[in-house]
Structures are given as structure tokens and as C-alpha cells.
Image (cartoon, rainbow, N blue to C red; front, side):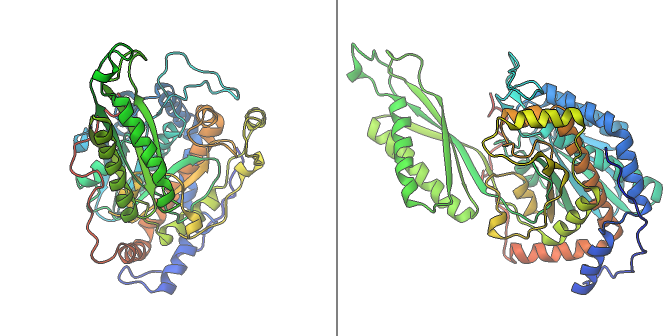
Length: 495
């Protein structure tokens, strides 16, 4: 790996932590997160380089486990064991979720949280090779790279723990073990439980095909399984005696598809029929369809969702069936924080991108031939320019980090854990997440998270400014209410 150029930073000016001026805050961001590196940052970077093989091994174990949402017993246990070994106090089974945990080290303010994920996606099980090589009998694959996500977050939290210990600096570091991000809304239950109360700032990251730390946002999401029940009958001998649950599903889908013309065009609705019957000659007595709806505005999302529910009721009435639905997940849009994003961006520039060796270059060139979008593989080594929270910086995806961001000032980044041009939730991203390219991107994330947390501990004025921005964007009258309501965690949603 290319060595970082380490230069001792100038001493930072003393800053008031009470109502800092804009000029003070801007100066603090530039000084605290400059592309030069002080001795504390140098120690963190050096130690992470040294421990890289250890963390790469942990990420590969989680990649091999490939456990689906709320079933991540081995993955969570591995990370919990690592944190206990490092001296963290680990609380498991939080928020009514067996695979969720919170690990804490230190005392006093500031309190910084780091999010970690480790759930896999259904399907996508392939070897870590540049051609699609399915793994027989494996239910899931890490097509979103969460095996890297959780590991890098633990690595960063460990570095901050070590710095707090040797410096004697006041502060608390928390690592949140967050299961079932992929449709299970695991963090929503953790927010609802109050686990982020008293936290001053939260850091997170996500695997991707580029290195960027933008103040971007995402789409709010609501999802449910609609279950239709009819009457079974012989489809040829006595079809008049049957009422097809599958007809109910198909009627609902048809109405929702017609509705697309008459909703805001940036709405996203997608579904999959999870149960359609057993045999063509039996009128299905049960059928199920799984729906997602997304929009950047939660109020618009809620109005669209009500129309989807109306379509379900109309379909049941028209086909002589009955329908019920279970809300499985619902997440807020991300609330961007420019103050924190600027700090993280500067640290990402310090760390730099991902440098491939000869073997990784060959892998990248071969796998890129399978992409419909051609991007130079050299872009993995670059850091994208900073963008603020403009409409163009809205992600097409959704994340339960959104709920966290409305509860505490939050910032994240992405790193090039996949070959540039890769799509998330693909066999190509799964393959890269299980080998050196993904692991090197993971190291970039761990370094950036740790350096950003260090800046916040050393410069509380940055936290004050970030909180003021956060409060202004939330609005004085904001009150958090989870989109999934008061339901208990949907622990069986992947079964």
C-alpha cells in the first residue's frame, strides 16, 4: 500500500465551546482536518496499517458467514468478542434484537458513536472471483459489503479507545452493532429504544465504488408484505368454487402500476411476489407480495403508501378475497450535516484512495468487462470533490441511518471497496467484498472514521456548530415517530 505522507500540523488555536462564531468554526475545520497529520493521527494511521491483516481476516469470516438480517448470530458474536478483547463494555441483545449490541469505552463528553452493519442479502452467493461462481447451498451474499462495514467501524472505535486511554482525554466512544439494515430497519428499533440519547455525533460509512464524503441525503422508505387469502378449488373441474389469492395479488399489482402515472415522478415503488400458489391446477388459497415505496419527502411517501394500501383493499374486494398486511420496515431520509461532512471530507483526502497491486488490477480489469457502465479502474485511487446537500446529492437508495440522523448529528462516507463501475447488490460487489480490493477500501474507511472522531474530541466547537445546523434543519417542532409504528422487531422477515 502506498505510504501516506505524514507532516506535523500547526498547533490549533484555542476555541470557545460556547456559541462559536462562523469564522472560528471554519478555521477549526480547516485546522483540525487539514491534509497534514499530527502525531496522534500518525499513530492511528500507523497502527491501522499494522493491524490490517487482522481486520481483513475478520471481514473475510463475516463474508463467509453471509448471514441474513436478524440471523447474524456468528457475525455479531465475532465483533462482540473482538470488542471485549479490546476492553469495551458490550451490551448484547439490545432493543429486543438478539443480534444488536452497543459497546462502550471511556467516560464523559464528548460522546461519539460509530455505526456498524453485518447483514448479507438473499442470493448473490458467489466466490471472490472476477467471474460469477455460485456457492452451492449458501442463502446469502455480501452484495452490499456489510462484512467490511462492521469490521472497519470496530477498527476505528478501537483506535479511538487506544487514544483516549493513552491521552487521558475526556470522552466516550460507542460502537453500535446494527443488524438487518437491508429492509429490516434494525437501527429504527435502536433509535426508538433511546440508545442514541446523549450522543453528540454519529459517524458511519458504506462500501461503494468510489471514495466520497458528501453531505448527501437519501430516500425515505416504507415496506410491507401484503397477504391475500382466498378459497382453494380444482382449477379445471370447479373453478367457480374458488377465489384466487393470486388474482388478488395480481389485481393489486396492476392497480399500483397504473398509479405510477399519477404520483410524483421521483417516487420509487417496487415489489416481488413471494408466494403465488403451489400448482396451476389448484386455485391458490394464499398469495403474498412484498412492496417497497420510496421518496425523499416522508409526507409524500406516506400519502403514496396510503394509496398502495387502498389498492390492496380494492383488489381484495374485486377478487372476492381477503387481504391483510404487515409493515416490516420504514426509514427516514438522511438529514445531511455539512459541518461534519467537511471535516470527514478533509480526513478522507488525507487518507487517500485505494491502490491496487498487480493481482487486484487484473481482477478489476476482468470483472469490469461485465459492467454496462465503464469507469476507469484508476478512479479507485482518487477522492471525489465535496458536494453539499443539493438535490443532485440525493442517493437513490434508503438506509435506516436516516432515523439516526434525525436523532443526533450524523455524517458518513463511502469508499471504493468495489471496482469502479460496480453496482451495489450485485455478484460483482459481492466478489470484491471478499478479497483484497474490498479490504483495502475497508481500511480507508477505518482510517477516515478514526481521524474524524479524533478531530471532534479535540475540537468540541465543531460539535457545537454541527448541532446548531442539525437543530435548524430538523425544525423547532420536530418530534420523532418511527414510520414502522410501534411494532416489535420483525425478526422473521428473512425467513
